[in-house]
Length: 81
Image 1: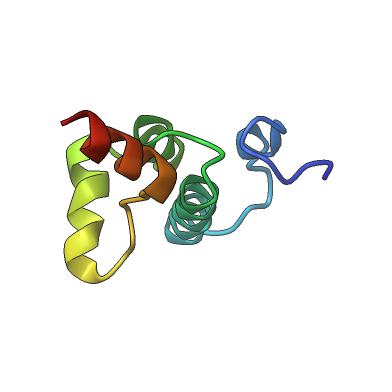
Image 2: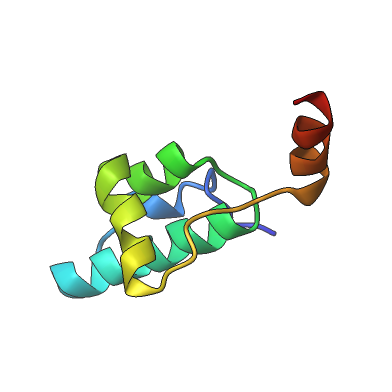
């Protein structure tokens, strides 16, 4: 989908984007969405949102799902343990 992914370049054009709070909220929402879909890493999601990884992880305390688990990978890890 053109212009809707983490590498689309849409993150770099902030002309007439709104207040800094609106821009931050939009970037955070996009980062969480892309991370939950597995399109970007946790580190990249934090970077997109303008946060460090620790602050991004702190969102979990606010009810934001910032931990993505691939259950097939988890099963493989458990079988190797």
